[in-house]
Length: 212
Image (tube, rainbow, N blue to C red):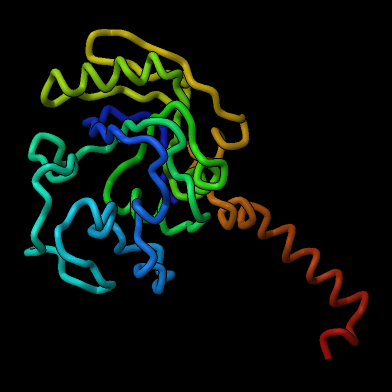
């Protein structure tokens, strides 16, 4: 998993509440469990005007010009701002896979669905809860200034706007450690690989009949 320390990234505003995981990555794309290649299908039904299928080449698909991800000023965005209850609906981990594969590393919203929120940390995405007033401010500033960026410092747990406005965000020490060091659940386990091998050696010596 990619580590996250600090990011100064272009912001994309998704001014919708209750964005569910089927909107983030529609059900037909759940056939694959490769964890990669989902970026072109992020927000597929909002982003394109035709029906998407797994493996489809999206290069020449007709796009909805009114959808925010298709607007030239937001190309290459790494920070997504949204409204309440982002990531609601089914618990599919494909949703953060698609968000990360597209290039977003940070999502800022007033609230998130619990399972989606947890899945973000397992996929190198930093979900930040900010109060509604702060999110409103970010939306207004972003829409008023093309090329609007935010500086997100995980170590300091701060988000800073181009004008110098800054706010703190909460994160557990465990999640912070994992993001800073690029560790998902497998990575955390492998940090104890020597201890695991030592246990297996002792276990095999003590109960050899189990391994016959």
